[in-house]
Structure formats: C-alpha cells, structure tokens
Amino acid sequence: MKKTKSKKILKYDVVFEEAEEGGYTVYVPALPGCISEGDTFEKAKKNIKDAITLYLESIEIDRKSALNDTIFYAL
Picture (cartoon, rainbow, N blue to C red):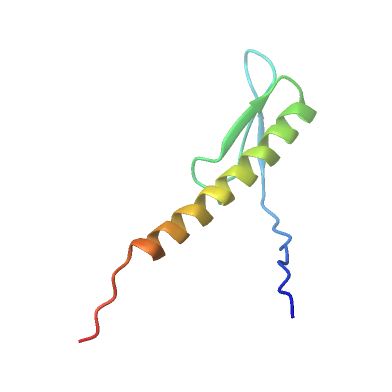
C-alpha cells in the first residue's frame, strides 16, 4: 500500500504594525524571529505567509538533521 503524506492546517496569531516610513511590519509571536514587512497590508500578509512556510520548513530540516546526527548508545 502506498503511503500518502498528509498536511496539517496550522493557525498562528500574526501582529501587523504600521511602520513610520509607511507600509507594515508583521511578526508571529509564537515563532521567534519570524518577521516580515510589506508596502501594503496585502503584501505584508503574503510575505508573512511565505516567512511562516520557510520558518516551519527550516525547523523540520533542523529536526531531521539533529536526529541523523545523534548517536545512541546502549548501556
């Protein structure tokens, strides 16, 4: 039987702040360092979606790498 990958729907609170020089800065409090910006609200919204995707992909890569680099000893 063929295994299929399932996708999870994840929801995060996102904070939009109007920048003094115009546009928006946006970040995800639950994902430290996940921040983006945009000249318009819609552009900032698109950019933070991309940033969240990249952030979560990097966590998954780091997790897999850490598992591959771990040496287990039986005592």
